[in-house]
Image (cartoon, rainbow, N blue to C red):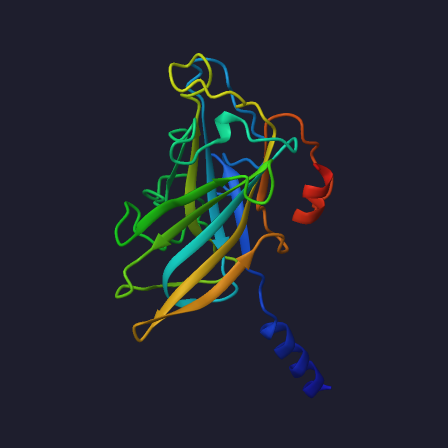
Length: 252
């Protein structure tokens, strides 16, 4: 009997934890002031409205020597039609200045609770570079877009990161309304378009003996993740959690 109990204990201890992706408005997910409710953009002329999306992630276990994270964020719009000018954030797009990303969390006074603010980078940007790498309207369909970003430390200065339940700070993505019609900017219509935004993947890179290696791939729809959010009013709010494939099927 003692032998069986010992084997059971080993099995429980050895069970791998799920890597997870999290997003929330206003603060790190799970922190006071954060929200995963539908965000309605104030598209009125001169509203000066901003919306800030915070991303954090959990690794499947302690990961040694992390030097970079590559992320993919996907947007799906309400109708299968060409994307509205407001959502053209690419260079040369109508609203290219309407989105920005910082990979720096800032000081400990910012809204991230203990255990939800481990850093790959320094609080004020020490050691890291990166941000939005590309934005591709139409990626995967007329009513879709993909944003890619990267965070990188020097290969000579890697960082060890803990696994779940501790979360690692990833990014702050900011939307501004300066180019909505009548606001004095680019008169980019379609701000009010209903949108699903999802952090679809994070690829974590390590460095050992001067060689980069693939340390972890974290995909959306893992248990416990809060990896998709709704923007504006039209998409129905699912009563139960659904997979990304199920969610997209609702809106086709």
